[in-house]
Each structure stands twice: as structure tokens, then as C-alpha cells.
Image 1: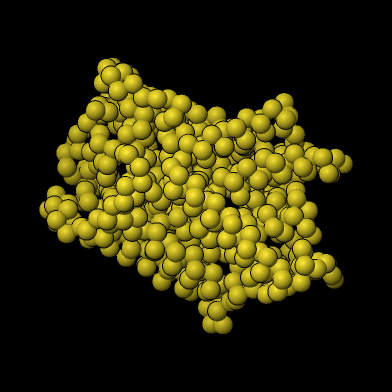
Image 2: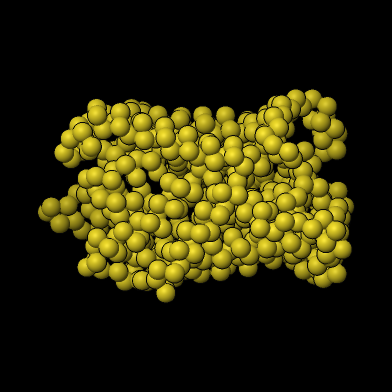
Amino acid sequence: MTLTPDSTPETAPLARAIGPWQATALNVTLIVGAGVFGVIPAMLGILPGPYALLGWLAAGLLIFFDGLIWSELGAALPGSGGSYHFLLESYGKERWGRLFAFLFIWQFIISGPLELASGLAAVSQFSRKIDPAFEEFDKDHTQTFTWELQKGKELKIAFGPSQLIGFGVGLAIIALLWRNISSLGRMTITFWLGVLATIAWILIEGWTRFDPTIAFDFSGAATQRPDLFANLGPAMVFAMYSYLGYYNVCYIGDEVRDPGKTIPRSILASVLIVVVLFVGVHLAILGTVPWQEVSKDEPNLPALFMSKIHAPWAGVLVTALLIWCVFGSAFAGLLGYSRIPYGAARQGHFFSVFAAVHPKHRIPHVSLLLVGGLMLFWSWFDLGVIINALIVTRILEQFVAQVLGVMLLRRHQPDLVRPYRIWLYPLPCFLALAGWLYMYLSADPLYIVLGLVTMASGIVAFLIWSKQTGGWPFGVGASVGA
């Protein structure tokens, strides 16, 4: 590479080497993981039988509308940072944009570790099916603390052998990241090949044995008469958890070739692929295993599925594959997520302590310890609690803020070059906004309160930080650090 006299390796622009195929593959591989298997039993507990498919389809429709918003923002503002970058630009870099970008990072310190902790909680669940003796041992030695939030709604924290396995996996990940790792790319590919092989195995086994009379058996579900309006939102939360990542290409916009075309195409293609894939996985499993046999607390649906088809050895094998895949996902996730507070602090939009770099290992160790420590803390909670808290906490500060942001950007910067424009604008914006607010208001009051407390504390922290730095609303401009 040849640098101009005014460019150095630190200031030279990143190479735009990611085309539409690579961008789509990036999105899909980051979406597809073990999460889909962990949420199916929970969705069946909310919408019984074939009604659970509505959760996947409604959430799929929402990410389509939301994907149009990400597409316009990503094509018009193809820089690194994703939501952080979009919110800063949409609401004004020197005023409200500083607040919204700060709030995104602030809520991310909660929701990011929650997302990573969901993987550790899944490891805990899957590990119970490795051996029947261990499953019994875990049951006998697990202490669960339960708080009833309202009728039928509980908050659970458990301490036991399986939770220790998840916690130990988290500690191992932090230890591995406490150094420079040059082989990360090869390790990540190995992890994702494992999860893709696992899903392919389940799809082949399920669809070669698919029985529509089992998959679409409404007999038991009809007698339960689910309240679709009230229950669809909570079911969508679990489906949305599995869909998260359809917009990941926006976080590396500086490295995308022809971003005006590549980003929208990859986002919309990713939405279509994952909706079809996850509906396919759902039907493949529940077209073989009757939904009436699946408890809402089933810890390892793939093991139940494979054991029914073959023998217990198949359940153990698929469990080992899933744990391997979750380890890889959490490993790559913590690596990237620990850099988000660090990057914002380096640019002067967050507390400067997070910009610290370890003198020996050259890693953002303060940010890594914060995100990793919170990941370990949340890993003791019930997987359903983690998923609900994760999604609800993000809705206002990220997804709703972006829906309003794309409309503000059109109003205040009408001459901004927009290689892609939202189809039938502003209708998809209103539909996406309605979908996100419906999910938000359908959540348990505890999670809504958690989201509001996160936002309120973020505003207070922003005011303290702005006062220290002399930035808006207490001064003009923004100084780096605090």
C-alpha cells in the first residue's frame, strides 16, 4: 500500500474491501447461533403450538421495516460505529446528538453484557443434558431465588453446578482476551463453522422426517385460547433476540465497497435469509417433536430432538457442538463489545477512563473488565430474564431513536446524498415505530422500569460528564475525555 505524504498508517483510510456477498455473510454469521434453540421453548410457553410461529413472522416483519431504516442511514452515513454514528449525526453533533450518542453507549453498558451473558446462561442450560447423572446432581445442588413480579411472572436467579460452568466459560473468555490474539480470525471461522454445521444437521434430520400433522397440531393450543394481542409482543421479544445482528455491516461502514448499494442489499438479504432459516429450524424440530412434549423450561431442545431421532449419544454430541458455538460467539462478542466504550471515549464522547490502554498487552483493559465483569454478573440470571432485559433496554435508546433520527435527518439535511431511500417513506418508519413501541409496552413492568432507570441514570451521567468537559449544554463544543 502506498501512502500519500499527508497520510500515515494511523490516519490512512480503511480499505473498502467488503462487497455485498461478504457483507451479507457477515450479518448472517453474526445472527445465526445457538440462541434460536434456547428461545423456542419459551415462545411455546407464551404462544402454544403453531401459534408460536406468529412470533417469528411478526418479528421478521418488524426487522424488515427496521432494516429499511438501517439501510438509508448506513448508505448515507457509511462510517464506523453504527447507531453511535447515526445518532450523533441525526440529532446534531454539538447538541442533542451528543446526548443521544452518550445514551446509546450508556445503555449498551447494560444491554451489551446482557447479550453476552445470554450465551453463558445458554451454556448452563445446555450442559445439563451432557449426562443424566450430572443433570440430577445439578438439580439437587442448585439454589434458586424467585421473586414473583405479578401473577405468572417471576424473576429467577440460580446458583448451581451448571451456572458455575457458564461462569467458568466467561472467565476463560476474559482470560483469553487479556492479551493480543493474532489467531482470532481463524478461531472465529472455526466457531461459526461449528454452528452452521449444527444447524444444517438439525435441518436435514428434521425436514427428512417432517410431519405436518405434528407441526400444525392446533388441538391442544386451541383449548388454551391464547390472547394473541397480549402475548404476541412477549413472543416477539424472544424472536427478536435471535434476529439481532441484521444490521451489523453498519458498524464497519468504512470498510464496505460501494456502501450506497452494498449496505442496503446486504441488510435486506440478511433479513430474508434469517427469517426463512429460523422458521425452518422451528418447523424442522416441531415437525418431529410434538410441541406438547416441550416444556417452556426445556433446557436443551436440540438434545431432546436428536435423542428422539437417534439415541442419547446424538443428544450429547449436539450439546457439545452448541456449547462450542456459544463459546465462540461470546468470545467474538466480548472482543468487539469491549471496544465500543473505548472507541467512544477515544473520540471524546464518553468518560475518558474507558480510553485507557494496557501498557503491556495494548488492549482497552478498563473497558474489557467492565463489559466482561457485567457479563459474569448477569450470567447467574434466568435466560428469559436476560433476554427480556436486553431487548427492552435497547428499544428506546437505539431502535426508536433511530426511527425518529432518520426522519430528523431528512428534515434538517435534505441535500445529504442518499444513495438509498426508504421505500414508501415515511410509512415504514411509522410501522417500525409502532412495532417497537408495541414490544416495549408488552414487556413486564420490571423491564420497562429497568429501561427507564437506565435512561434516567444515563441523562444524569451525561450532565455530569458535560459539566466536567465544558461541553453542551454547559459550554460550546466538546473536549476529549473527562
